[in-house]
Image (cartoon, rainbow, N blue to C red):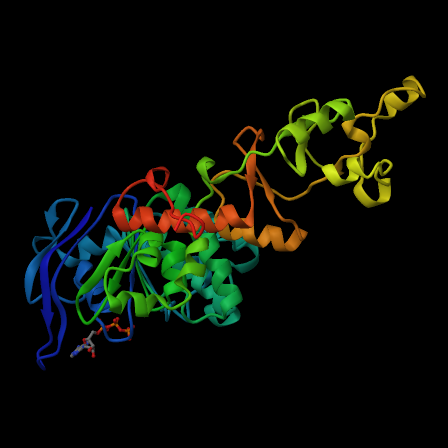
Amino acid sequence: MIRFENVTKRYPDGTSAVHELSLEVARGELVTLVGPSGCGKTTTMKMVNRLIEPTSGRILLDGEDISTVDPVELRRRIGYVIQQVGLFPHKTVLDNTATVPFLLGWSKAERRKRAAELLEMVGLDPARYGDRYPDQLSGGQRQRVGVARALAADPPVLLMDEPFGAVDPVVREHLQNEFLKLQSTLHKTVLFVTHDIEEAVRLGDRIAVYGDGRIEQFDPPAKVLGAPATPYVADFVGADRGLKRLSVTPIERGDLEEPPVVHLDDPIDKARARMRSEGARWAVVLDDADELHGWLAADALDTGAGPVADADAKTDTTAAAKAAGKNAPPTVADHARRMEAWLPLGSPLKQAFSSMLQHDAGWIAVLDDADRFVGVLTPGRLHEALRRSIDADERDVSRDEVELETVADA
Ligand SMILES: Nc1ncnc2c1ncn2[C@@H]1O[C@H](COP(=O)(O)OP(=O)(O)OP(=O)(O)O)[C@@H](O)[C@H]1O
């Protein structure tokens, strides 16, 4: 959709901002350009809407050489959001949002309708904010108006230059999440400039890491973090890249351990025998709909401890069974403990780790799309998953194909 072919930009004073850049952004893809100040990110971006002309090379938009397109016509196809937002101070929020529809000659009613729709989309109630002036908004709200304005004429391409750079970290994360949600329905082709690696990782489908006017690596976030292409990239992404990578590495089936599974209404003797035969210290407990209920500890059975106390474990001792007869044989339900910590497959490893800490749990249950139990992730398995995914990225193979050498094997 956006293609740079050997693009170079030298400013008249001799500063060489971009050298021989070749880069392609696919339709619907969000590419983040990240790098230190002065490395040429903004120059790259401004060449796409012809605010800056390249010294040599070509830029193609949807196959068309943009040097042959009238800049005004070109900019109508490209939404542009910048850090300083650049809202007109004397125009209301609605009128600011409707800037491009106004330039395109839409009727007043159409403009207002579209602007209200967009404000709603970026999380601003048009009835409440539409008639305000920019200085009556917070920084985060102004950025939202900036995004709404860029989307007004529904351009296929968005250029975003540090759009969330001027707000505090909490609002920033909020805006990033909202933008990701929007992007998941709008599928714009986006070039997003930032100097913040965290932001680049969170938002980008792929990240272009800039060195001095050159791209040092152009890959998905997990690969940039797990297999930096050069020492410069490794240094730029930071010594804690392993930790950062947790947030972009999904839980896969192959990462999971499969402990014995028992059901709430299984007789306790059967469950005990099952756990013994598998040498397991605990089992996962499912209810009669095969949904996760919790777990059963072998210790509790072996010591002959009585049923777990309700207050402690919220055990769903089947009242019906109890009522049915005093001599009903004990079932798993009498000893099972509730487990609240679970995640869907595909969740980031970071969420699993955080959930383990939050629930003070040594494992997290993982469910599939239909909420069926598929296995558990333990801290050891989490570490292995991370190592395997890094190895897979280094060798360009899938995670399943990686065999790890463990300390014990060595
Ligand atoms: N009009 C200009 N004339 C001369 N040099 C310029 C001009 N604009 C930018 N530069 C230089 O080009 C280089 C790249 O600048 P650019 O603004 O593209 O970097 P950047 O990566 O976006 O930096 P930042 O994150 O600080 O905005 C810098 O050395 C800058 O000083």
